Image 1 (cartoon, rainbow, N blue to C red):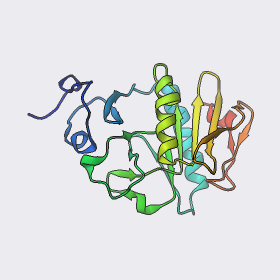
Image 2 (image 1 turned 180 degrees about the horizontal axis):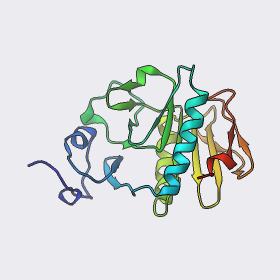
Image 3 (image 1 turned 180 degrees about the vertical axis):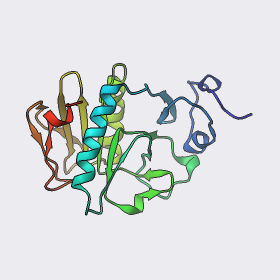
Image 4 (image 1 turned 90 degrees about the vertical axis):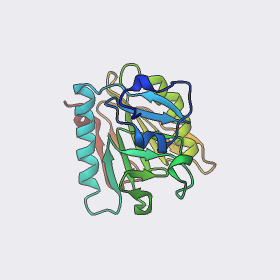
Length: 196
């Protein structure tokens, strides 16, 4: 029997990407270490910020081998790119991600760690983004992780250090300009990001 509703799935069960691919549900979900996490529908402010950042990254990466992708876009977080779908237990849908290695891209999205991930916080998902995904992105080797706080009009950036642990940079607030070594030359003016 096909899975057409989230209510047909056991929230206590462990699932894989192979299971995920068979679901025909309307709800947006992710798998975090095999557990289902329903995603909130983004509001207008969230969408506006995502669009502004996407435009900035796309423009900066125009002649680069790196590419930016916006959700919905499956990112199968694993350190091993040759895993079969039934072996992958974490599938996330970052708001934005930058991938510089074309070998990590396939028809379904990305397998492995993106170079940079941006998550825009929405009411109700802060714990997941701040704790659970922080740990997952760090373990997978995502080089840079941005947490965008729409209500505070600020951004917190974490960069992997030489030991594979995240180091938090100072918070960036409305009026600041953000740069990243992942996209040399790009300047993200936060006033423009939050102008929605």
